[in-house]
Length: 301
Image 1 (cartoon, helix red, strand yellow):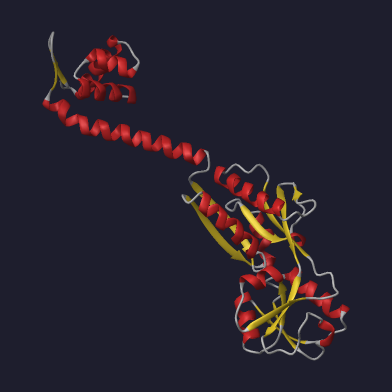
Image 2 (image 1 turned 45 degrees about the vertical axis):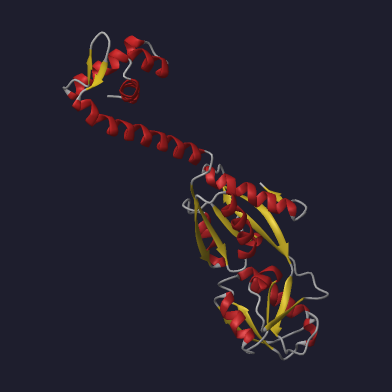
């Protein structure tokens, strides 16, 4: 039994006319007769009663008809699903991001989910020290991270997504009106730990050395904990500017750091030869947003 036989059976059952069924199926009348004969042989029953003038369904034919229709409808659904998946309309993408790289990923995902609502998205937040481990895991399609954490690997491709400055964050009542760190000698700082974001931590340590600061430092393992600590007056902090906007709070003020080059460069990394159709659609959005940022050398392919 094959789908051509089932399709012809449905046509004959609906038209009760072998010639018309042949026309609709774009085959000869003898082919329709052969298909019906093969089905009747397989089921071991007559599906139609035929004479010179009339064609009628037998009771067995009537019983088979709804099942035949369901088979063809499910076949069409399967074809549509596979076609959409091939074009990226369905499927899944898997993404990792570290604590400081979520702002750009969020912007891309918002656009992606609006354009392709049927594609499932798996998200995994990791620490900066885990980037290499997850880059080698083929279960994940994209990795949002700081460029300096990207290992040298011929199998990994990347898109430079954007750069960010760093901002000083402090309680609203903190006595400072601009991001001049030189006036902060003796202040307590609460920072994201080196394990969670080693590049950010090292950048902040370089800033402290440049400004001749030796502050008291407490470290936390999540952005949320850092923000709560600052809001509670436990200290002040330094974080990427866009991340601060994403985590904005009425209790906290932020100021871009003055007089220092604090740019951090971020990338979206993925494995060479990306074969997931849904992932290729997401990559197009990542590239579009990266281009719109107008950064030179926006691609590192």
